[in-house]
Amino acid sequence: MSKYTTRYASNPDSVKNYNTQELRDEFLIKNVLKKDELEWVYSHYDRFMTAGVMPINKSVALDTIDPLKASFFLERRELGIINIGGSGIITADGETYNLEHKEALYLGQGNKDVVFASTSSDNPAQFYLNSTPAHKKFPNKKIGTNDVEVIQLGAPETANARTLRKYIVNSVVDVCQLQMGMTTIKTGSSWNTMPAHVHDRRMEVYFYFEVPEDQAVCHFMGQPQETRHIWMANGEAVISPPWSIHSGSGTSSYSFIWGMAGENLDYGDMDVCKINELR
Ligand SMILES: O=C(O)C(=O)C[C@H](O)C(=O)CO
Ligand SMILES: [Zn+2]
Image 1 (cartoon, protein in one colour):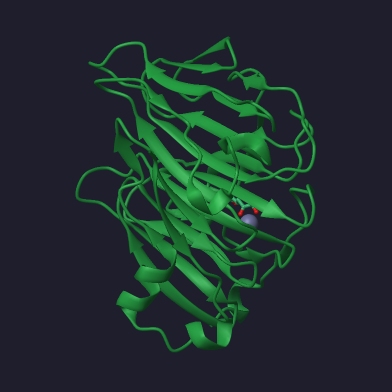
Image 2 (image 1 turned 45 degrees about the horizontal axis):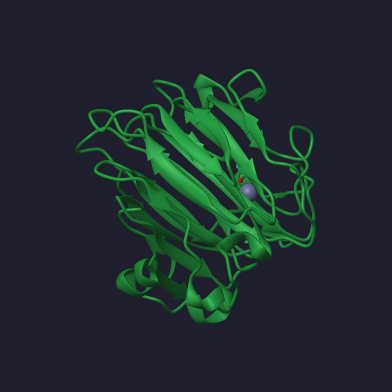
């Protein structure tokens, strides 16, 4: 049986009074990638679910969990998977998908038997998973590195030069509400998502990886005039409520996977904050 914990939605006025530990308990997801098991974080922001699995000694099945009250996990949900490890194999109702490093898979509503495996336990796959409620069945689709939409953002002068890769967006794959992609900060830059933005229409989760040992990312959250920070280590994720900015500055370069869900599928629907008006 897969494990899970629940995170309820919080009011921004209450969050203003949170101390460091309370902020971390509410929004930080530690140690996302679990060996040989799935452990979900079920957020009540848009009922967005986050997990990560490294199959090493055995393959791992996508079991349903009690809060879904569903006979199988994808009965009323869709799932996005990005592999940040070695070669992996995902089977979904008899179809096999081979996912190499930094390839992705979208699984639509209705897939009953889903199993995650690694090609080699010496270099296991590391599957990062986001799932959202779905109202319609769309076909499964593998997103290889050539299918991804790539954009360059920022500049070295403003310490925010980065490459953004859109994997699961509606110009690449048909989805109900899930969007996922990956951003890599270029060497010498530190900032992601600066200028920062909010999108009250959607919540978002950032999963930081490729953070070198002994380095960290300082993630900024909160309403634009009430920001707070959470220090993040490699392999940790953070929940961003719809009312919150989500931006980070690392002590080195790093990558992160962003996943979001909510009212619309318009990636560009963001309310950008003026840098010198942030507080
Ligand atoms: O570096 C960036 O900018 C991002 O990666 C932004 C995220 O994609 C995002 O927050 C989308 O709403
Ligand atoms: Zn965003």
